Length: 115
Image (cartoon, rainbow, N blue to C red; front, top):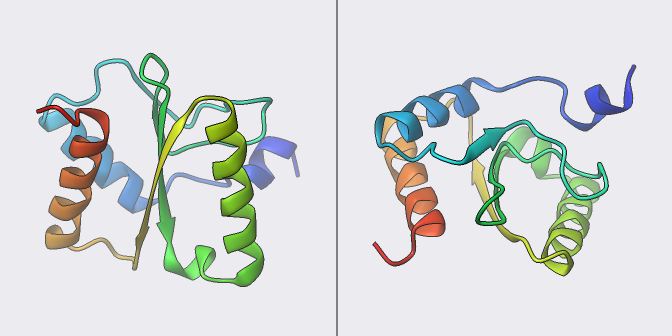
């Protein structure tokens, strides 16, 4: 198994739904997805390189263990030390329409706090 595959094995249905909603709201300008950043140590679900902002959608089934929570904290500290702002959104799959709306609102406020 490759290093990158171990880091982020596949795109989740929630990530696809969030991408579609972000695109529909015109929030994908300057955004990249599934791009390895900061010394190849992490692959955020969505990031805006020009704003140095990264978003992770953390499915509860994977991100609830103590070991994973500790890894997530380490990644946040590393990114913040490199000048990145990080938003982690914990969700329970499948992502409901209501949860999708809340998620998009959080991301919109995160990437455009002055609007």
